[in-house]
Length: 189
Ligand SMILES: Nc1nc2c(ncn2[C@@H]2O[C@H](COP(=O)(O)OP(=O)(O)OP(=O)(O)O)[C@@H](O)[C@H]2O)c(=O)[nH]1
Image (tube, rainbow, N blue to C red; front, side, top):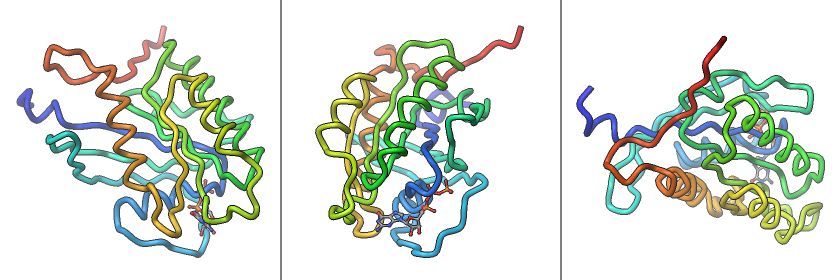
């Protein structure tokens, strides 16, 4: 593959507890629509071109099945991934607590200390049922050196921003040599 083509491909995995709105976020981003009915995701991959800082990025977005504390990180969600979108629902403290657990699993699986990632508080339109404050969301993101944003897939608030922030986190860590940023590579011994 020509280096120029290789440069702009970015693979982003969307992780988080079940039912926090991962698919809704991805579908709103890709198709500009909100689907009310709930079908648990097995796994789906979507592609979209995103313009960021004057360059066109070919983004592959992997919508994963929800994780819980017992899930083992799928190697497909670690190897070859450039950046992560970690989603909790602002209406669920349990889903918020899961972010640190999922983050720790990625770090442990990949044997790295820092990953490009965005922490996303979803369903912000349900503010009256809020269990997680913006301050707590932002604090956690700072602790894991991630970007943070609150969104609503339903009312289309900050959906595009999630993926812009993810590209920003990826590019921030990319080598300044014009090479593509590194993805996680694991060696089985
Ligand atoms: N009010 C509101 N509801 C939402 C929003 N996003 C998702 N939902 C609803 O929350 C439920 C779960 O949404 P999904 O997008 O399927 O959640 P998921 O995280 O992909 O779920 P899994 O595939 O099981 O992991 C659905 O009933 C959605 O309609 C939102 O921004 N606001």
